[in-house]
Length: 331
Ligand code: PBG
Image (cartoon, rainbow, N blue to C red):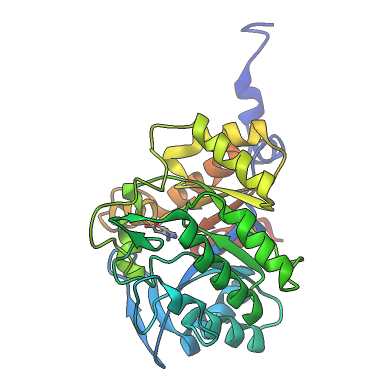
């Protein structure tokens, strides 16, 4: 049937009818908030390029988690800024490493929270690369050893989900095997499977003090031009035992999210990264966009593309937006 019998505007007439036919809804349950933990007490180092975010010492981090839980956000993703760095990032495997301390502190004070931990070497190596460097490049198989150690140490501290973001080949299998051997067969792995060598990580590298001191990450992270390859990455990670797979960044890769959704039957995580967040903040602070409206539109588009879970620095603000909407509806 064509116009005039068909009039698509009929289903847009009122708020009630629009919400009835709405296809995509972002829920607070879908959101994970990334946090940065640093040494010291009562330390809050604001991250300039990510307004509202800061490096927090463990005590303030626990307070921040309590605030998030009160807002309804029950999952956090932790990144560590260690006291000192070394050549291979072994410091990330220490029993009392910065993230290990943070996990224990959060777990001892908050019952109902899910802690995802980023597993990677770049915050812990002197050169800022995501693994052990041999002859100017990251050595894949040597790096697997440190990643496995770091994962066990974090699982022992009480982390709920292990999320390797290094992009080494074979890391999921290696970490799965190490976790299982140490009694953590019930600890899920969230694989940063299709992680692109992206310019959108700029603000994060300020936040985590993890920028590479030489070269770039193009020999391990993916070429932004490729999407067939993303499917191969995900296929490998699933074979090796990934429980959740991730596409990162989100906004320039919505097509990749959709392809993954159409190809595999697995929960998909999208990482709405630091540069994507910073662009919204910069435009909003200039009065160029309606911030709340844009945040909601961005997160909705990521879900519409096929993501089930979204890691986003907008999480607390989105929680406020959702709360306001519910109050308006009288819920
Ligand atoms: C560590 C890591 C990075 C991000 C998450 N884990 C940075 C990188 O790969 O350089 C980026 C997150 C963001 O930009 O918000 N490998």
